[in-house]
Length: 67
View 1 (spheres, one colour):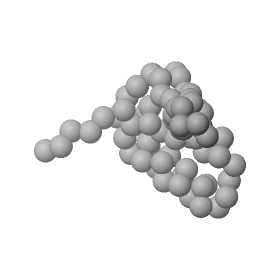
View 2 (cartoon, rainbow, N blue to C red; view 1 turned 180 degrees about the vertical axis):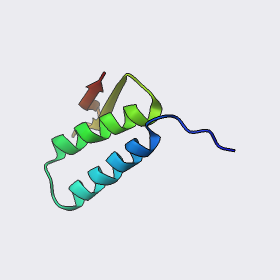
View 3 (cartoon, rainbow, N blue to C red; view 1 turned 135 degrees about the vertical axis):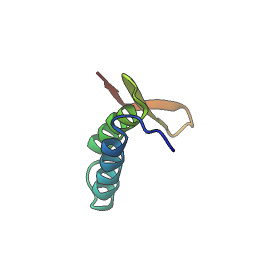
View 4 (cartoon, rainbow, N blue to C red; view 1 turned 30 degrees about the vertical axis):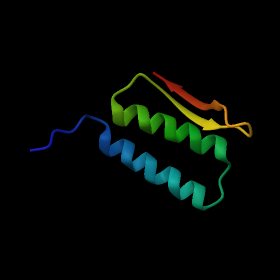
């Protein structure tokens, strides 16, 4: 039997919603915020960040979520 963490199904639902938002052309910043929150929920974390490379290749935190 596979054990699941509380919040995983909610996190997957949020990831799915974020993907739909991107496909509709929604602004990137709110979608990144949704992804950070979903990642934290799915991992059972109190903090999550979405890091993306800038034009120089340096990673930059584009969205942060905390409890």
